[in-house]
Image (tube, rainbow over all chains, first blue to last red; front, side, top):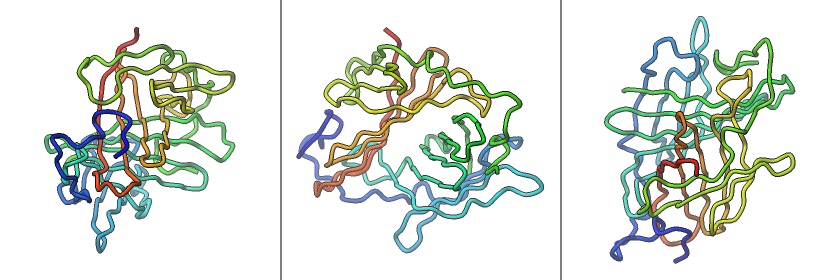
Length: 133
Length: 122
């Protein structure tokens, strides 16, 4: 079994589960900041065994529905099956956003890494936002 | 075009200054089973992440807004064949918070996993 740090190795000969279950993260998550300028809502769902994310961006008069994209569920170790983090990528054509989030104590913490591809000159930017169910 | 309000263009845009990210960063947790230390350097036009034993990866810097200016985050990716690791990091005051999102491509059955470490500038 190949590895690049100790964390990659199953401890004590434990057997890896083979799959991360996203169930603990599923549901609708709302931004704790009602004046948020970034992502205002996240829907994490299981579509016939496929883990997907649907995000909504702050806009007026209504949030922008970004649609569903495939997501990856992460556990806290190589031998845990319990999902506690997620990543997904949106390609809007004019921009790309990497969404990466983890859950802790009933809160979901979302980081976004945003890059523009439209020649508008806008700087790539990072955001950090908090969500509750 | 915008995907959210924070995408709106600023009146003035400055190039991203990677200076706050540059240097040798040491993990506060000497017993970490993840990354012990890392270096972020400016190499010609590119920002480079170096992790001992992993080699180099191009790092992309991010500012706080579309106006640019000082970098406060970066992302990079390592492809080891049997595993892919996304390194996503941001500065919180003078603390570098580094998240590693790992997925395995081999038949080991290992779970994709998330791990976080905190680093200080040497």
